[in-house]
Image (cartoon, rainbow, N blue to C red; front, side, top):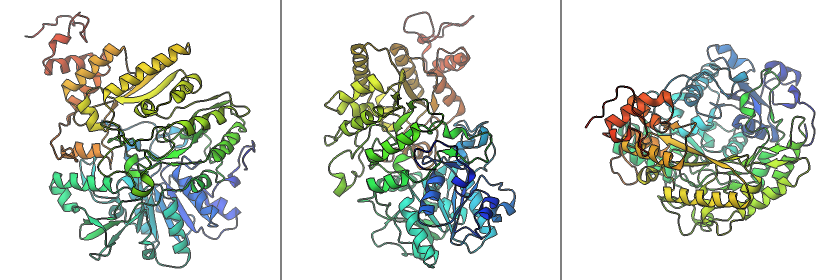
Length: 612
């Protein structure tokens, strides 16, 4: 289906997804077997579709094995032995996050499965699939990729097992692991294998990891991290390793890294080069059908958020410590051209169920459209520093003009009634822009009644541990946002994202946040408990109790009881939270906040006796 074609796609328009489809195309075997923990959705927001379409564009035959029944070994041989390699990904998110809440309770819904059905992928999907392929084809090259593999490429703390696990590459018994956004590395791997070279010939490719039995079989400039055994035994060693791994995640100045794993050596090459605008355009404009494969009669819920949306950038220099983006996509910004985005938008307007609304023009952070400063092209991003926090760097180039021009072009397209910006924006970056044109037009044209921003907390030492801007920046933005709305005669609200129980947050800090929310007149509908996912600096803090840059101890709320109290405090007005809020106030010695006074959080319950 070409851009502008509004017919419903058939199975023939997708990558091969069943043995029957392969037979109809007359293939004897695929060149690459792509196994994914998600349903097969042919859209640029789904990593498996991107890699599959990329390889197809290079002339390779690609078969997609989506959500295979891991308990049936025959499923993994249904397409026959692939000519070059099996490519394995757990899907768009870590399979453990897909299965469990921050309280380690099982979810009941999976956005990336047909009809939202739960249970169609295993826990630790990348490892399970890879081992199944290894059992079926012992000598077949196996390449891991996707978020689950990328964030688990080194020895890492696993929240669900509550222990440090080795590199996923070792557990999965695979040959190579592609980290970050994998197009560049995958092109090079495919060409190397298609040339008849062994998988070991790929080891110099940027953007991948491999295991070797030979000591010093790695680049001369490599930085050696503490070993698996050391990071298991010594939390300070874990913190040093985690910090080095984050600091070297830079395509310009980053060094290769090495970590010993049970007698073998994990080698991470330099990150892949930042894609050019032309390269990003080419990947974005591969012939995706923007739909789930027709075999899913119930559809796949994950497509609904992105079907009428545009992704204009990659990377994020925001530096939030709880976010995996810095360790996966990196902090440098890559963007698509206006022309490419306008072509895609025109294709969206031709879809039969398009109602005139482009739901988002975003990415990791919507309003990042160029490098944070002019020095990055030659020097990379600064080691050990964040561009925006705890206070903005004086070299930050805050300019929304290019993004604003893009939005203007999009909303001028025929059939487009409204263009929304629903990805998160960095309010502190908005405040650094000397021009107020972006905020004026954002309020005027691109908000659907509510703007989503992420202050996350209000206590500055907690915000510092989060890598978030100080609360004064948020308050200044809110004042400016209110003034712009008033000037335009609008009444549009802000939905603040908040995190409870982040490392560094004590019960007193959660109480202060509750009091602040009350002063602000905010009653948050949703609160996210801090979730220690693999690969983030905040997870390092959670596991070690150490702030990795300073080396100083940091408080961590670990018990289910304290986490429940901190979470309840942020929704103190809800009746079902009352017992937890009262318990928290008693434990913190803040009985003064139970009463009928204006500054109280709770009215006394029947029979309540105030303790001195």
